[in-house]
Image 1 (cartoon, rainbow, N blue to C red):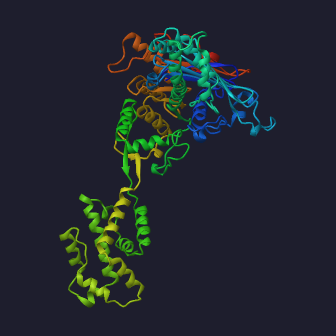
Image 2 (cartoon, rainbow, N blue to C red; image 1 turned 30 degrees about the vertical axis):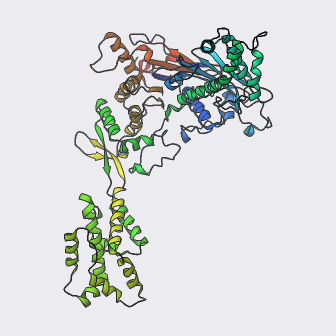
Image 3 (cartoon, helix red, strand yellow; image 1 turned 90 degrees about the horizontal axis):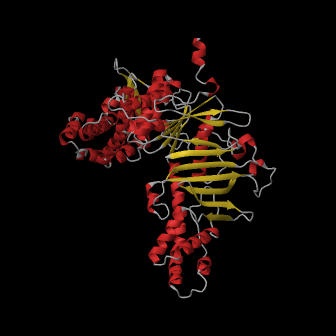
Length: 620
């Protein structure tokens, strides 16, 4: 969970803004006031950590739905002489607490500063002045632990805080294991010296790798207390030096994993979700907007029956008059076209022509039965029929009593015995050489069983691969429609519901989750977020919204919790579970204000600028 974002000189924010987050955080404010800047700061941090660059246009999580425009555009006032400051405070993941220094850690905080100043490129060439990290600091449980800065010689310098409780405790633990109580301070100083002269290479977000020169480690014996040679302390120091470089390297790697894990939990849904095509399979999962547009949500529903049922359960809970179903599309034209292409590629177009001539419905004709048996028989029966029609002289000239009914009967009786009668093969061999049609049929029938089996397998694959469509079934009359045939609000709602149901342990940032929704549905969304955040999924929501109905539902649930009037089975909601923020624009940049909530679900602070008072103005 991310507990807090701190930002300065980013988009709408000039001065440092502290942005506390809770399981459900609602961000309100006027249009263009800076609400989305909070969400975009998360996208920026994620992109920098994952891709190794602060010169960000389209963040990887948002695709083309967000365009930060590069550092010179997203830095406040487009003044690239300013320094961006960004900090994140997050829970320390359980796996990090198995490592030295962090065994007792609960919360870690990283703060970075990014600037375009001091770059080797010409200062008047804005496009080439790429931003880079200039400093980084880490706190663990509100105590400074590490700080790094880029020196004038372009080398990273670092400091380890010897007073941090984890550093002190580690030194004492080493001293105890070494059997030397005087060693604790020496070990602490060794660690500080190691970090001070370590090589971090190039750092973009936080150094995950660090190296220590061998001669430095050897020189640490200078820290031995004067006048003590071959002493217990000296032996203990020698032992300590063999492990300290590994331990300190592990500290940096673990902190890097802590922050990268935190940012990897972020998911983003943009303000305009995709209205899917009728055949949603056509959406490309490599599309940079695959998740942010909501396209991936539709695919989840088509492929995961459990998630489909969960969303249908939410539909029922929210009183949405539809249920979702996945329907296979029998597009006869596309199936015929596919069969035609296949048969043409095999230089055998007769099967398709016979299907077309006979007016056969391929969906029914090729319907799969037990063990795909009917499709198998149909493909081969039509192959034999095509042979009989186009080369009728075979049976007329040589055996007028042998009909295609006889051939079909043989196939039916033998199920998979597809070999032509031996006399057929002999007659075909006797055909004159050089006739292209004869040569083609000879090639096709050289291994008739393999030929028929190939046709059967390819046709079955066509049927299995045919597209599916998500449909909305009217629960009143049973009619089925495409999401494109109903109001756009449903298509905006479904991706939000899928993320709430399918995601676990994620921070889900959504711009305008209430978009195009009826007020009653906006209120019902509040219960969806409560269940997803406070229930088994343990998600965290950061919601940029204008919905009064959404906040009123959350406040109502807090009030019902305090009064013990919640419906049976409902999750309790306390004031510490919900954070309300208001972004207030100003001439010197926007300001983030916290709006307090008491245990009764009442707002402690008044809305700034008369926000949400328009209703009263219209009434009176």
